[in-house]
Amino acid sequence: MANVAPEPVDPAERPLSAGHLIVAQLEREGVRRVYGVPGESFLDVLDGLHDSPISTVVTRHEGGAGFMALAEGRLTGLPGVAMVTRGPGAANAFIAVHTAYQDATPMLLFVGLIPVADRGREAFQEFDLTGWFGSTAKKVVTLDDPTAAARVVAESVHVARSGRPGPVVIGIPEDVLTLPAGPSGGVRPLAVPRPRAAEAELKELVRRFERARRPLVVVGGEEWTAESGQELMRWATRHSIPVLADFRAYDAVPHDLGHDIEDGPGRGLEQGLEQGLEEGLEEGLEEGLEEGLEQDLEGTGAYVGSLGYGRGDHAARLLDEADLTVFLGAPRGDVLSDGYTRGLDSETVLVLPGDAQGHSGRIDQFVSAHAPSFVLDLVTMSASPDTDVEWFGAARKAHVRFTTPTPAPAPTASNDSEGSGDSGDDTYVDLTAVMAVLREELTPDAVITYGAGNHALWPARYLPHRAPASLVAPRNGAMGMGIPAAVAASLAFPGREVVSVAGDGCFLMNGQELATAVGHGAVFVALVVDNGCYATIREHQEGAYPGRPSGTRLTNPDFAAWARSYGAYGETVTSDRDFREAFRRARASGLPAVLHLIQDPAVRAPATTTV
Image (cartoon, rainbow, N blue to C red; front, side, top):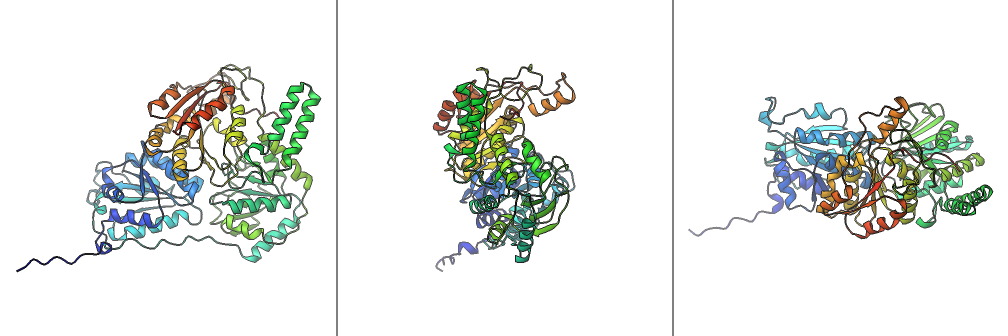
């Protein structure tokens, strides 16, 4: 009897394993990268990624993988995906989940688990997934049914993006992953709600604006676009309504209208300062400054700064003096309100896509809406506010003065005493001068990343944002985020410039991800600020326990040589006069680059004196 060839099987009809189906569904959801440290607990998912268009970015630590996924979620609006193994791997990734939860950023964390039959027996690396992550994730789910793999992924993406965004943790037992999941190539992605305000709600808000003399808008949250940010700024500028940003949501709106990078706000003030200093006369200095300030104000919009740590005093006064405060995408939380002490009694309108989680103080009108979409509806409404133009103008002037880099006298304190400003000594780098150079050198859509620490005060204060998705920094104060975020930003936006500002303590918490950058072609310039201590904690010690520094001193390597050992570019800079050319060399190298900046250990923050 002749052999009969079997009927060909349509690939779509072949049963997939649950692990392969997870990958297929991630493809349908539009995921382009997964970040992770491999583990034997999810080998079948790794096998599915072998033939997938999804790029697998292998990191050197699960904390780095988690922060990269968080950064991708922050920059793209689609949940970033991290994959780690059980027990120790999950523990290392926990910091990123907590950050994503407090920052309200969409993220998925897949955690490989022990076989189902081994549960409850103190098996190798066994732990309680819900017990660990239940208090700091929007949802925790374990895949026990292989046929539900696609549905679980689709629902997790939906939850991570809907309402108040946040992280979802998905447990994937290693034995379940290899079981047949059926012929399906996945399920249709679930539509994400983007609620719009009703016309009656918009009209009510317009009436509130028209009654107020000193209305204030505070922006924050995720998914701001160039259109929504620009439209809000034009509308607020036209009606003389100041706009502040929530802590580390500085890229929600453009900081000026119509400036290029070389002639942005503050440039006139810088030139006036230079002119006055050259003349050497106090009256000449004041005259130059005033002329420069008027030049700057011609192109600025309604953006007048940010709230939270490192904010200007003028921003705090605005929050106190406003008779109407409209929060778009951000609640009035702890950091924004200086520890629940400012602006709590102002007439308040809250526009959020979910509930009022994290909000404190009055709520006179609550609008359940996607804030960037809400803005596009608001600006179409006819409105005639009678605002306090002098109050608005004073806020703009104060903002330009506060955010313009100006020289400060060198501190006289010893290394273990408090200090502010920047040293003029050629053995140290003046970070304020560095920021002045970056304002001129950076492209308008450059992405800035940093972690937590006093080093972040300089870029937060002095570097303007002119494009959406141009900042990744932890709102919960997590150290170690800056370098992983720079890796993810470069991979997500390969055509955009990326600069990370890192303290010496923050950098070495995840500096090993420089190897990931080299291995995967990520390109950025990292400025490592070396002052030999955990400066934020040292500053608190100097206030509470003067003359008794304890547990805050650091011993650092040669960061430039360290970078070169990874195959990256490395250079040490000891004077701000050398920074511009060093930065240009680093940028021209085409490699991930580290500029090791030696800072005076006595300096804690930018000078707070005004000119």
